[in-house]
Length: 437
Image 1 (cartoon, rainbow, N blue to C red):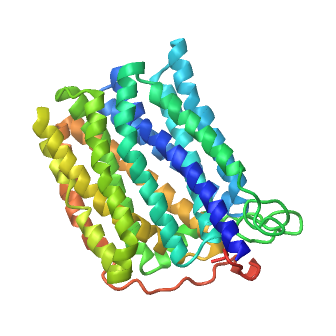
Image 2 (cartoon, one colour):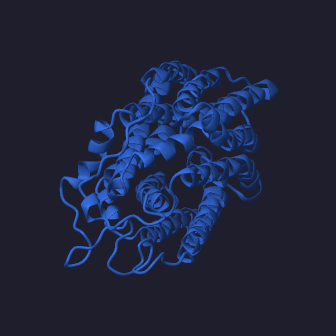
């Protein structure tokens, strides 16, 4: 009972840290493309290069981070990544104030933040899996998903208003401060159990691995690819991996094109752009709240299949945005439908992925997934930027929407029944406790 209350208390601090950094991120929604367009006068190709370079190089830099995170205590890694992002993002408003801001700096900051995001996500996923299990894990993921969509609802409209009142880098400053507050919240989490099995000190690592005689376990060359091997050898994770990487990549590839179309050619104000993408995200909040009861009633596989199919049916509408009220209404409708489906799909998918990955390789699996996702986003963003430059943003948006309609064919057609097998580090694990998974 005491350990269960302790886990809940620690998840509460983690949830609070996640909430504040997520709000900061969504306050700065598309801040770098906006700065590139409004301050540095970049066009569609330049904005696409900016959006692609960060994830691409950040993913490459992050390849060794999965094994590095796997054999370290999770909470210090998360704090370090928050502080790294704080310093990197803070450099943008400082350079702007001094008149030194350049396109190259935006690219470097994007790369740094992308790599730190991957390391943070890997550590956080392993931390949550060790802290919670069973139905509590789905509840936790649903709460995190609800928090994401709540921040998405309020962040972009407030961010757009802040840009209009205080200038284009105001939201970037808020984002930097949010990382600092997140780091402070994570530091407030104490060690769990004797020896610091999660986030503490002592001889046991963050996922429960016992340190090697000379210190913590050492990563081997094969650890760099362990996450991908687990994903590709798993009969249900493999199609989910291909599906989610492709869907996320196509959706994110169109984001800078929509910004160029709405803020440039169609003449929408930044606050209108933020409002159009922020308010409909109430659908994501509703979807996240429905995830658990839908799984209880219809089963995990059916929920993933239906929600995963429906989320691919909306983005084509963005190719038909028009000026004025009709354009705003269309964006509202498309975004509401898309994020409502994602709000259901994401927490169920995230919980299943953790359930099917043993504690000894969670960080490497999540890191491999994030690296692949960011690399796909980078490649697809660059390709769609090139396509928009050769044709038009509308044609590029239509092409992405049509491809998304085919992605449900990749979802697993059979029930998600496989159970995780012990990984190469599992033999080093102590007997699982209440948070051991």
